Image (cartoon, rainbow, N blue to C red; front, side):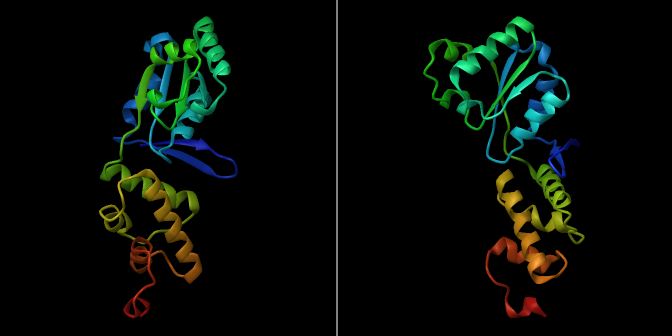
Amino acid sequence: MVLPLTGVGRERSIVVGNANEAALRACEDHANWPFHTAILSGPPRSGKSLIARWFEASGLGTAIDDAELADEHELFHAWNRAQAAKRPLLLVGRPVPSEWNVTLPDLGSRLGAALNLGIDSPDDAMLAGLVEAHAAQRGLALDEGATTYLVPRVERSFAAVEALIAEIDRLSMERKAPARQTIWREAISGHEPEQGDLL
């Protein structure tokens, strides 16, 4: 499943799979959040910012991205506003909350009471969805069998899939050639193709 979002100048989407489905369900079930607040964390390029935008655009509540870098007093006041208005507050950060360098004691205790949501590593089905989504976002037409070939060979991470599709796109444009297996193989191996690949 894909949740569409309108990006700046291009269409973006959230690929829903094993890694983020529970977190998204919890976002929709915000009425049961303790103190109307949840904290979402996850690995790089895992769609945390997109989820924050989706959360606000869907009218579910207020979201603060890169919350671990925000001014602590601003976060403290945002937490208090969420309680007063009973409006859900989603704080999004890369590390888990226990790794945030919080120096304001009152804020630390409030963050400790929030619901913790996490994004895990993608499984094969989600990796395939990510390959297709990143290719579509770039307008890259992958030859048939791309996901079957790429998924077993790519590192199991959101960032790795995004980087791989970017490299396939670069090579395809550089070679002025369709994104077929020769280019997939070169993108994965990271070296120039053998002479036989050029034939």
